[in-house]
Structures are given as C-alpha cells and as structure tokens.
Amino acid sequence: MEADRISNLPLDLTYNILECLPLQEAAKTSVLSQHWRFLWASIPQLVLDESFCATIVNGKSEPADISLRYSKVVNSILLSHVGPISKFVLFVPSFPGERYPWVNYVFRDGEFYPNLKKKLPECLFTCSGLTHLTLIGCKLRSLPPSFMGFPCLIYFKLVGSQELSVETKKSDYFGKIPIKMGQLRTLNLSDIKLYKKSNISVLFCLFASSPQLERLYIEISELVKVTDDHPLQIDCSFTLRCLRKVQLLRVSGWIRELQLIKYILAHSPVLGNMTNELHKNMEVEQKYNFALEAMRYCRASPNAEIIIKDK
Image (cartoon, rainbow, N blue to C red; front, side, top):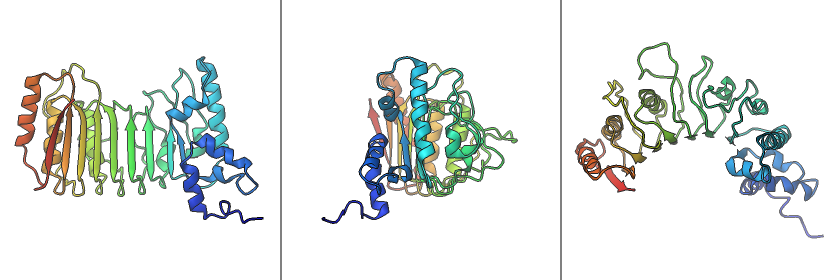
C-alpha cells in the first residue's frame, strides 16, 4: 500500500488544515481512521460564532428547541476537547433566564450569563494564554482583584458592547486600570456609544494598557439624540508609540469624538493614516465643520494622513 502522507503530516500543519474547516466539518474527519479520530478535538482554535450557531440550529424555530440543540452541541464539543485553547470565539443566543454552564469547561470556574446587563465572569480573566479573544454581546464592567491581564493577547474584539465601564475605587475616570495587554496589536470595538464618558474612560484605559497597539478600529453605535456632550478633562499623557492605523466608522462629529481624534493625532508619533467614515445622516454643514476641525489638529507623526469618507 502507498504511504498515508496526509496522516503523517506534522501536527501543527494538520491543525492548520483542520482550522480552515468549519468546526462541524473538522469533526467529521474523525471517521477517516483511528489516527484522525481525536485530532479535531485538540485543535487550539475554537470558533463557535454566529454562523456556527445558525448551522447547528437550522430548522429549529422555538427558542427552547434552539437553546437545547445549541447547548447540547457545544457541551459535546467542549467536553471532547483536549489540550490548550489559544483562540476562543463564542456566540451566545440570549434567552430569558438561560444559563450556559458549559462555559465553565473553558474558563474552569464561574458562569457566563448572556444577558448584556450582567458582568463578565471572573473565570474569563484567568485565561492568560489567550492570543485572540472575541466577545460578542458582552459588557465589560469590572475587573476582579485577582486579574493579572492578558499577557499573550494580540487581537481583542468587542462586538455589540455599547456600554463599557470599569468599577474602580478611584474617582478618576482616567486612572490606570491593570489590564496589562502588553502584546496586543489590534483592538476592534464594534457598536459602542463613543460620546459616553464611561466608554471614553475605558478606551483610554485600554490604550494605556496596550503599549504595542498598532491598529485601532472603532464602529460607533447608531446615531441617537445626545444630551451630554460636554468636553472631558483628559489628564492622560501617555504616547501611542506603535499605533499606525486608525479607522473610525459612523463618526457624527460629537465633541467627545473630536477629543479622541485630537488626542490620537497628538500622541501617535508613527501614525500612518486615520480614516473617519462619517455617519450617513450628518448634514452637509456638519460634515464640513467636522472636516475643518479635524484638519486643524496637530499631528505627532509627520506622515499622518487624515482620510474623511462620506458614507
């Protein structure tokens, strides 16, 4: 018989192949041979995202049936997995009163509640080996005293987290929070209310905790009537010494958005370009005033380019 070259591939290459497949397809390789039976269960990247959920619950319409089916499959995957997890993406369908104790297996302790008003579990903050972290529909609220940061994290994304806040003993909103993401290269925040003071404060805390940050993406939440848009007293003076690319989407020209833009331009010595995509509902005069104001700001980087896009 000819040699089985596929089964004799190096393990890291085998994992790369399996990670290119949807998880349910990767699991089907277990029927190929005894050698492949458990390989899928040890891949270091688990991507249980919204498309994965949609595939699993296809044909189910009742919330109880969807919840039962999804929980059963995720239970099976997590209980079958062996070895370290370097990347974990989790989509949690939100049903009233529902708990998903299978997250305990990943984080070893505590529980996760999909309700957006609940804080993240302390157990999340013990996963110091993570390199990629995507949180969907979560609220970053408090940091436990035992939290020592994410020393290996290089990519951090928050999706649907309109409310960001941190609980501190200090009254200073811009005090340093020990998040410690020393290797973080990309920060991606989607659907946040950038005009809110608490959100701005957490954003600056993330800046201060990510000295290697190179890419920043922020998608601002849909335009709403803003009643509190007074300038904030920003006492931070740290430099975003590695930041090279910034992209802001749905910019509406609020004062606090302008403050953030001004700060980034003034404290990013190697910035290459900052793209500001304006909200589609902005009036022509508002767009003109925003462009005029943004172009006036001082730039720490001689190569910094401000790009303004009209949606």
